[in-house]
Length: 148
Image (tube, rainbow, N blue to C red):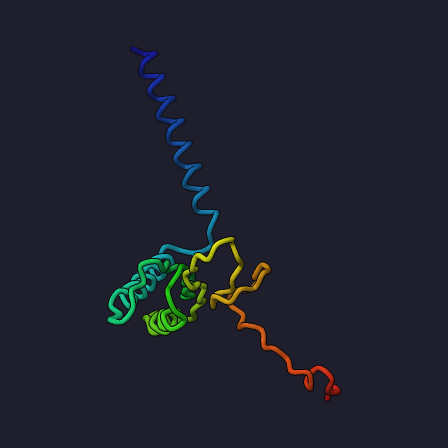
């Protein structure tokens, strides 16, 4: 009987120690408190509801992530208008401080794989910044004009 009680006590102590270590590890990996995380979940829910209620477009392939009020949209849509509308709807959600629109246009299969930017334009190279506007083409007069 003493051996069984001793073994149970040791197992209980080991379990308690393991539980404390797990909780300590979870607490140290983030500087955000539960209130901040819940607030971000509420903002994400608000954005998702805005996208679901849109009468014109469906956003089945769009994912919403929120961190400290910054809304990140990612996924695929059919048209540039859908992409812009999703960002506009997300910006109107309560608690959203900024919108990072990483939504891409759904690719159209054409044969061999091609690399395209978020507007569907073939680039032929890896895109580094999906938030940057497309590069503006310079005219020959701009290239030869002296700097002011």
